[in-house]
View (tube, one colour):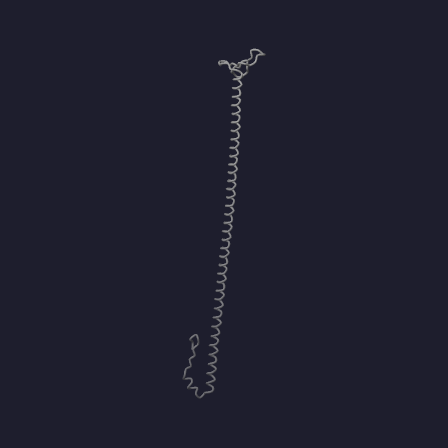
Length: 186
């Protein structure tokens, strides 16, 4: 039996009963069956070693895939945390806006209350001013009436004195009686 290098390695037997003792390849020397088996085992060992390396590489690739998946999970967690933080920031901004709105509403209410108080004070001052004018008018009228009453009393007293002291009337007419009122009239 002989082996030839080519597209397929198949031994060529010279006869069907002949045992494989020498293998020859075209352009090479002949080897014994034992050497062939050793080389075959060596090649099979190399193939198993390559298979193990392939499995190791596959395992390494899978571990890299797991690491990459872990990184993706971490990145997704980071993105989620960022989105959550952004949502929290938006909530805080909304709360700040609400507080600012409430403060402005409070300021507006205070301004309206101050305006209302000022209007009330103005109305009170106007009413007080009107009342004071009315009181002053009443007091002026009262004093005017008192002066008129005093004049009337003096006139009656003068008439009474003239009638009692008719003889001395000529002397009394000579003395002028001045009565001053609050208006300065005599």
